[in-house]
Amino acid sequence: MASLSAKAAQEVLAADFQTLVRDAEKLLEHSATLAGDQADILRAQIKASLANARASLKESEQALLDQGKLAVGATEDFIQAKPLQAIGIAAGVGFLIGLLATRR
Image 1: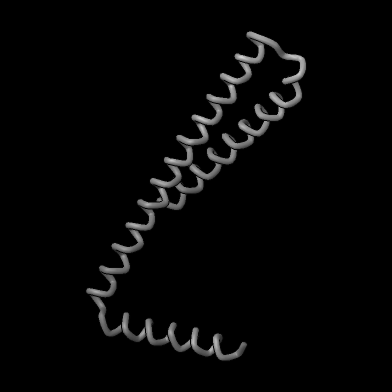
Image 2 (image 1 turned 90 degrees about the vertical axis):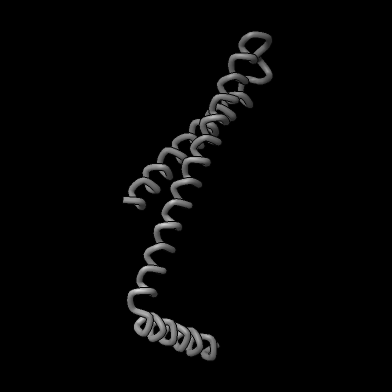
């Protein structure tokens, strides 16, 4: 469930950045020919796109933090429920990392 919301947030963020890039490209293309109100309208659109991108980043950050907290909680629950298995898993992972480190 958390990964689905993180994936959705990532898609929204990507869409917002694509919109931001398009608006910035529009500003660059028309900056020489635009004057007054037209330039102000385009700048306002770019500011709105930036605000949307910032909001999406905050949502993504919160979703990732929530997902991380859930993972930490699940790990702590597992360790408290099965401490000997947790020690065995940690020792096995440490052994494998040691093997991989010595092969280089």
